[in-house]
Length: 414
Image 1 (cartoon, rainbow, N blue to C red):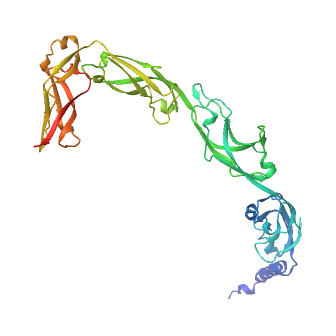
Image 2 (cartoon, rainbow, N blue to C red):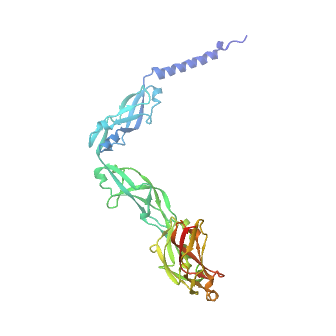
Image 3 (cartoon, helix red, strand yellow):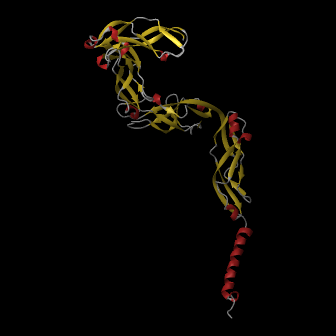
């Protein structure tokens, strides 16, 4: 039979080596005296600053302090600690009682047990405490750049995510801060700019202050800002004419004062949709010969009128038509309401009709008639009522009545 593996010389050599390694590890980890390790620049955490703030106090010098430690312990334990999990804590609120300079005690907390502090770079932490003041500053904006030709912009148009910046610091220092602003530097802007901009603090002479050097805390260091860029465009003003009284737009002469055009501003996208602005409509049946109308200039949202005061006058005259007065007793009441009897108390009505001279020569007085549509009654109550009337001319669509007309009716139960 072959020899067993345990009988071989090589087996005993391997076992001997493994035993030697285990013995070395035991001695190195368990029996050897503690090792040392240096942990540098551990940041300091101050606890209770909110309590100090309630007392009007603020730490300025010393808040950025760090501590370096030399520690000892087993090699395996030291391998688990570094500057990220070793905590240096100062109980600030319990050690600070007013303005002045303090040497503050601190505590060290390790993430594992079995660590001994051999030495520290400093036994205490020096801080300077001042009386704190808070101040709100409205944000301002300044544009230092260029925009494309025809663009309209103003530093007054800056828009901010928040209207104010709150600054906190030593009272004497805070009193020197006069302005909070953002500064936009850009070239050839053609559309509205938006993005985050840093906040600058300035003194009353316009000098930029460094908040870090002055130990000033700011509620916001960056502010989302919108700077509108508007494009300017001149467009004509238009009027719609509603045919009536025998007149159409072809019979109209009109002028718009102070100008037949208007200058507007807006985004390029908005202005691209506007070639003219319609002021409104004028019913020609309401104009006998001429009249003056006033209109406001209405623009889409985001578009502004930048010329004039936003209103214009329109002078309208009707040309090339003949008018004459007709007395008619052709008065008809239509759409009589059920259960009621309606009679016209107006037996004769004088109306003015208008049209071209050749057509007007063919119109007889008997061709003119008046219609009152009782279906337009908003309510039916017995008694005398004045109702609007429509005037038309039989056999002619180009001759019409000018002006408004009414008849008096008597309503009774049927």
